[in-house]
Image (cartoon, rainbow, N blue to C red):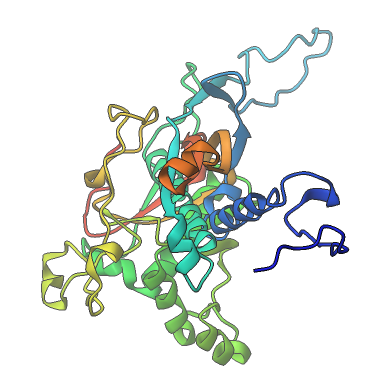
Length: 384
């Protein structure tokens, strides 16, 4: 090949990876694109982050949430000075949430695989890393809310009684199949709304999280349960997004909500329905363990876990959550972000390690704002 003449004019290259057209690395912006892909993967798959109280943790291992109880109104006695209520109200309590150890998801990308791949390998991997972090994030928060539904108020001052959490059985019998009965679910929603009203919980920010089959059961029963206007039933049924809210409670569906010791769903042959251990839902072909995934141990005695998230047996009868944003809190020391190796490491291994990381912790804050739906037992699940 003939050597290029140094006197030949050079083309004015457009380098899309170079920041502001300067003299920096021509690939400077490429990793930022990847970071964005990971974060979008996280945001699109987490719903809990925006439904509760979230705080940023700096220069400390834990964050304090202050809980203030109620006070009273009293008539003024003429001539008497006003120096505060005689009961020293309102009572104040605290809830401390500790940051768990660093949560990570990583992959090693071999450079030759990237060269030979016919699709954008890094973007695909980045999305999956974001999904993994989002799943864990939601699961820990939902387990914290279920725990709060079983707890008393943190206010323990003498002569004061603040409301604690709420547990509502779906149906009137100890039958786990009731968790998929749309009529009984609607009744449970109205019971939950009434309980939240009675406990003085704000209407603002009330939501529910159900597993997908529960959500679609509500839509399928739209003609009888009255949740969808008759004029739009066709569209709602076909789109699968017809149920917006019940009793002012906005409904979300998630595969990360505790559901009979599993995440999202728990399959069982219809012939086992009489055992009242699982909803009578036939497993789809080749469903495998991925969809029927167990709840892992989340006790604070496990390495890396500083808060109490319970274990599978604690959620043996849990089948949905209804809550208001004050139900739980989440502290973030490191927001979702990505790191990629470079330089000598990339040369030695001829590839890069792609790491998504997050440092967070979650726990219940106001039990009165937590409602747990349960089925398959006559006794409400015990606190843990």
